[in-house]
Image (cartoon, rainbow, N blue to C red; front, side, top):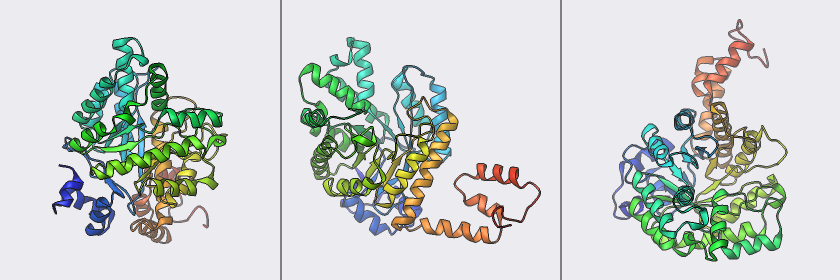
Amino acid sequence: MGVIAELKKGNVPSFVREIADSEKTELDDLIKRILEKRIVITRNRKREKVKPTGIGYHLTTKVNANIGTSTDKSDINFEIEKAVLAEKSGADTLMDLSTGGDVNRIRKEILKKTDIPLGTVPIYQAAIEAVANAGGIVQMTEETIFKVIEEQAEDGVDFMTLHCGVTLETFERLRNEGRIMDVVSRGGTLLLTWMFYNEKENPLYTNFDRILDISSEYDITLSLGDGFRPGAIEDSSDRAQFHELSILGELTKRAHERDVQVIIEGPGHVPINEIEMNVKMEKKICHGAPFYVLGPLVTDVAPGYDHIVSAIGGAVAASYGADFLCYVTPSEHLGIPNLEDVEEGVIAARIAAHAGDIAKGVPKAKEWDREISIARKKMDWERQFELVIDAKKAKETRNKMMPKIKEACSMCG
């Protein structure tokens, strides 16, 4: 039985109480928002060891870290190392985006080696199997897709990105409008390739009830993917993006009627002045479902610094009500992230999330800043290091810059 069904019966699972305690929010308020579908609990009922994590209204903004093999590099041990480091650096969730090597094994290893919720994009594995077994992505069958979804659910995956709003009608909006970057979503591209070749509609859209059946059985949170997200500032907030969002709103309503938990993925590359509108549109069209933003990236001109670009957009988005930030690393648009990139990406996203939480009045956010300000006033360096987001960097910088002066502040003396 899923968390919503349990709460409707008057049963309060222990992990719901844990979330209320950690978020410093009233238990009754938390339960009310879960039942309103404004908060989700990313937790597969099959997974025994997972940190209770709530995402949504008036909770702290959560941070996701992407990892995963590619066809160019499929070192499982390296990906496990990145997953463990991301968790240690403070990521709230992980997503395994593996497309190379033994994708089944890496998913199972991540589930064993980490305690935070894990998300996946099942269409990746379905495409890999179609290439291996049938000779190409276009030979993928609908049964293969749903077999993979169920297999990953049985393994214990806590949330899944499914591009259910990628439809032939939505693509017509994109084609008629014209874009610089066309479709930048890998999952969206895989589905469109299959749809055009087979002259069929998206099976994730036409068989949405089957997805709801699986989600309900395992209490998986659906992350409805944005296959038509803008991949360039010039393409932001166009007809294709909002047509897909409208479809996701309809699907969200159907999921909510079945007590299936839903989050909505959002753009993408968006200028600062359009972020507020994008957040408010999602909340309105998708019935208050938590918003998971991929960035957003507020300019296209800073490769190598896109973790900073993303943090700017993420802070603004969180301040207007976005609930979940996907980290971006310094290697975005350039290459595969290394360990240092993962750590920097997580830290940058956490800073953005916290800045947004202060702005939207999340209960424990301002208290955190108050505590460090008091420690700073007292020049209590050890207490400051206990409170900062990245204690290692703070200590290293302090010792390097002022090794002999123990009391003074480097700014005011």
